[in-house]
Image 1 (cartoon, rainbow, N blue to C red):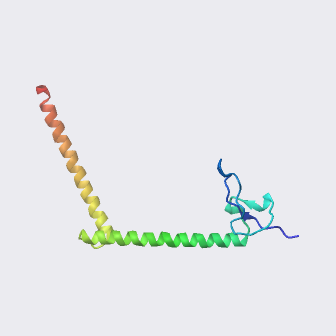
Image 2 (image 1 turned 30 degrees about the horizontal axis):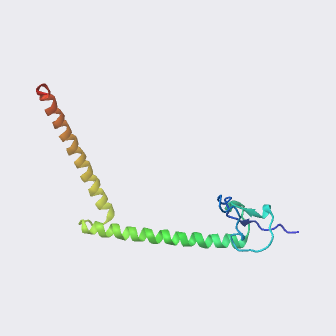
Length: 124
C-alpha cells in the first residue's frame, strides 16, 4: 500500500467567532483525510498539486518583487539625472560627501557656540 500524500492545511485554529476549520485543503483535493495527511508546514507537504501551486505563487511573487525593484530603480535614476549626476552611485557618493561636510560645519558651529557661552558665562 502506498503512503498517502500530505497536504497543506493552512488553519491556525480560527477565531472565537469562527472556529470551524476550512472545508478544503490548499490544493482543493476532496475526500476524507486523517490528521496525519494534513500539515500547516510546507516542509512536510508531499502533495504534488500543493507544491505546484506554491511554486507558481512564489514565482508570481518574485516577478512582482522584480517589477517593484525596476520601478524604484527607474525612479532613482530619474532623480539622479535631475540632480545632474550620470548614475546613482555618483549621486550617492556626492550626497555622502555633502552630508560629511554639513556634519563638520555643524560641529564647528557648536564649538563656536560653546566658546561664546563660556566667555559670556559670567554675564549670566
